[in-house]
Length: 375
Image 1 (cartoon, one colour):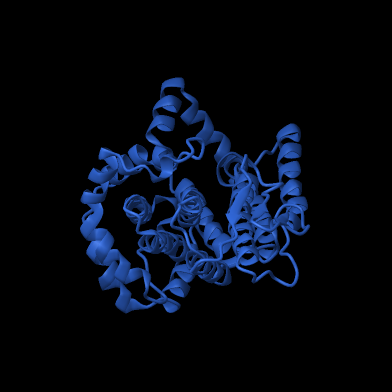
Image 2 (cartoon, rainbow, N blue to C red):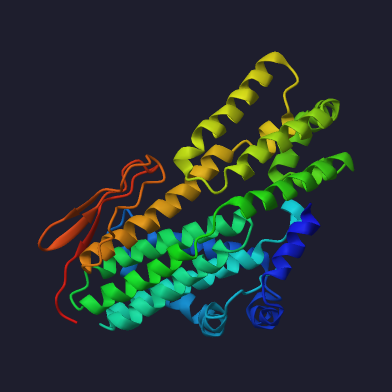
């Protein structure tokens, strides 16, 4: 139940850290955070080589806006067991603004890395990227999909910045060793997905209870609500959901039990189970008794969501392994790809290490890590 998940999170986190996080979470306008994120994302466009380290006037303005909070937030990132303001008992209605703020602060660190790089301070640039990655590490420990998705986005942007730093003329072997340590700590602390899907199931149960209480409209976005009201579909949807709500919830709980039970397995070991849920939904759609809440709301993007989380872990694992090989710390056995179950692809030659992200969704260019000798 939501309260049980919330109580468990409270037990394993430190209450004294609440005062630290409150210094930069409270009183923030959600619209402002959304605006900051929407206007800054293009700075890490991987299709614009080199741009990720270009400090523009807009970038300087962004840094000034977030400077005091960025400095304050660094104190939190070094704290163990930080408690963040999650409210699982509120389900999908919980305010995610604090997650967006952490993403904003991580971007500020990446811009700080770009500024330091421009001035030739590669050590300070690497430190700033490490702080950005620490935001992802902290969010990884929060059993909320919104937090895990933001963590993945932060790491993706951090790796775009690191690709540029790998080409910096003042990059030294010591910097590569620092990055190896940072990523090794990230992977070592990586949680399995069991608690994440338990919490997501709790939010799903809250979703069902909201519908039973007659609050379906509260669960829709403003655009969805306006469109359905204009077309007359909201009333029809409400009636259709009510006809089958008990069996709908039973289907959801059965599906989520499979998902929770597979939480410790790598993605490639889950695909058959995820496909079976999709097949069951398709059969129900064709035969009547379709579970609308499960199929169109709570489970509709489940397979893609799990693939995205697997992509995030594969990207981190591949980066870490490439750095280990470049630093002459190659693992005894290559880690396995989350998608194929086969060893990840690393090519080692005299001057550089080349790593492939084969099998991951989307296009991730090969990673090239130079083999350096100067410290």
